[in-house]
Length: 494
Image (cartoon, rainbow, N blue to C red; front, top):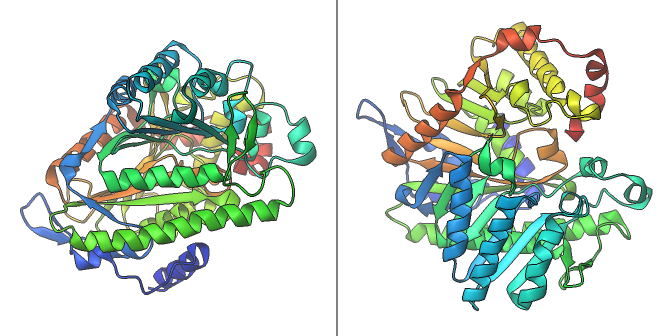
């Protein structure tokens, strides 16, 4: 139990949350039907209630989307039907014909619904790259719809001074990004790892879960609004300025002042929501599914998602199974150590084959990134062999002709269950950037709804069906010498 005590202490320090909070899962014991008709308690996951707000609901309120074109269709259809609010948080919005059609749908909805408000949060560096970019795509809506439309661009506090003046586009993105992927339409939330651009709408595989739940939608609308307070607001003249409720520009003054203010705004919000949802959960008697939103904002000193993820890995009980997926295999050393030393589950790790990596064939140093991921996976595998744990952890690579791979997340199977009872889904790749540099969010979904468990299993089956076991390839695949030389230095940047 020492690792649980240490976990709770660390979490309390990060989010300054009290340690005596009552758990909604403890008030509502969870049980799941296994394939033999018995029951297996989920008490081993009750600790989640001490570290994240709980949103109880019914499993039929959750839809799992499998294909990129269905993701796009959902965005367009939900935007067309929205009556009160559309909230979009993404790294960027693309500039192609599909993105243009999506913006036109937003325009039509704003024209038809005077009560509709559209709120967009993107990353500053990625969203302003080039002459035609995310900002220029959305400026006409800002100019035509006034208070109905808001656009904010998150700017990392690490990009300042001479670095901000001299770092060229693309390179300036290495320092940190707004990476959350949340798409909200009235009272429905679409959680994903996909961006709003052509590849993610056509042939770039990701994950997408649509949840119909007003409290959860309110949570994410408010979370994004909090981030916008310390982001740059874009006005109708295309200028970026301090948010009306902001105190510090991210690139001026003392960085410590900006970081302290931003951290306090998120910390206060999470604490308030935790208490609010604790009370609401007590009244929810018919729930069979529980959603725990997690946030990670390493730039401003909030390590919430990574602590929860690490504890989920380390608390996996004997006889359980786990599947872990990442579009970019660059697990933190702490995650790799936890998997090797503390996790008792049988694990399958899914990553992109170099041919399915979005950086394959890129010019310059970026072209070496797929080889760098191979090298990191090789080192991890070789360490597992030394520890005699390679029998418990297997590697798979996704490869599909003409497709790239960007899906990430986790599926957890309790002992004796043929279906996953838990999933993590969101923007995190479980890598160095996710923990230290980018703004991330994902949800931990716990369910004893058998139909939802089946749909989660179908999701993972679809992803793994395009993969093959990869240990031999990882060990034998050539890695250029220059990649081997620089990977340790730049590992925290990709």
